[in-house]
Length: 392
Ligand code: PMP
Image (cartoon, rainbow, N blue to C red; front, side, top):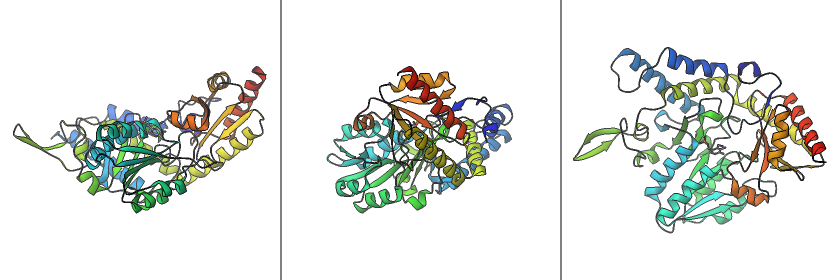
């Protein structure tokens, strides 16, 4: 699989897939073809090229729907998970919530699953509650069960933590949310690249993810929502393509998903996302999940043998390991690892409330993708041994 990734040179351990994944050749080829051979606008042109591009664009929507178990008309193309969550916050929460209502998040959420809710809660006069973590750093669903009240109208949780790799029992979380009449949004950014996802089985209400973490292009992502919820939501942005009829006397809007896709979309991004889904499915999400879980176990075992290393997250984490080296700032760890051709992430990972809960300013994070193997872990461990030698 490594051979499919031209931007990963021999000897470079790329361990930052949770930030963004490298791109396989079939995705690069699809993007190149999209601009070099088949390019035209969608949904408007009467000429053949545009009609063909429209077919390709809508075929990608069908492919995404199949990929996550939703219906085609429930797939909204957006810029990424961040835009998807902002869309649901502004359009759904902005019209469905009233002063005094409550939103439930968790300690480990990415800022993009916190700040949009804070913005809308402040505007409406709604309140935010935060589900704590268990001792092994999972979202504590027993605590969530005890916290939920009929005032809770929305629960928004990460399917997989971008810092800890903890996997949420999203089906149980959805059942708990529904037991008090709340809707649930699942942030699937770190889940779709590393495990099979079926929104019908999870029984959630909204599911969001970004293409660039799924071996696809940047600037394209997906909002899936139950059709009846999307259909009741007002537009997020106004402009071309999202309308039914425009006049100065008043404008009517297109049904979903078009209602939420104002303006010329990221046409080639959508085509690239289609190729990315084909790519991961040609390997198999079950196989990717087993591969990354095995790498995590191996990495955690090797790291735990180093006295100076503190590990975060559960042992069965998906594809992601956060750690710290005693007495060394994570940025220094990452810099020294980079000198040995190992690329990891260091910082707060857009999860400052989680850093506060862990009692650290930052962590070092290694995250895996389909192209990683045991030699990358060897590189990581050698690099950390060098860190501890340098810092004594
Ligand atoms: N949620 C999670 C769990 C993430 O890991 C990320 C990206 N780090 C996001 C949301 C935001 O995704 P994007 O920046 O692609 O919109």
